[in-house]
Length: 242
Image (cartoon, rainbow, N blue to C red):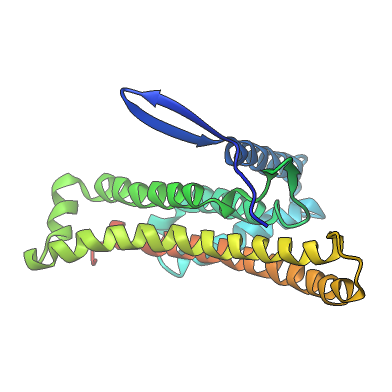
């Protein structure tokens, strides 16, 4: 079912800038949830972790493994908190729209923020820009761009690669989450639609349960892939060999 989006347009210097209020709201809610998780899991830390502290330490160890598989810890350790924050934020973002959606009239308000291409492409753009920032910071401006342009005939390919990396990183995440929620909406329509025919329940209800579980798996995998690729791109920029 097609729903409208709550859009607000601002005219700035003759340009219309459009904001999706639903995506903004869901990003704020996601950030609050991640913040609350971090506070709860890091309160009353103990030398011998139990319960919620075990969870957050497992996340840190898991992300450390991702970093060490792409970067030496002496260089990659500084990205540890960045990667942990990203994986928690993306996981919650991917999951938050799965249990239900909220539609007012024909306007969709509650959904996963990563089901919006603008959000995922913004995230991927920020990640790519961050890799350039750390590349310059750790190698120096001259050293970074010398390595980036050697040999010179590869410069157009390197520039094109930055655009393709940004697009694939953002659109892969968007496509998987959007398609998952779209199919969940169609299956839910079979169960809750106007039709009272039995086949709607027979097909819709089992499909809804199975696809819900599959979407949780896909959402977790996509958060993992995003972090892995982020660390791969970061290693290309901060290490001596490109």
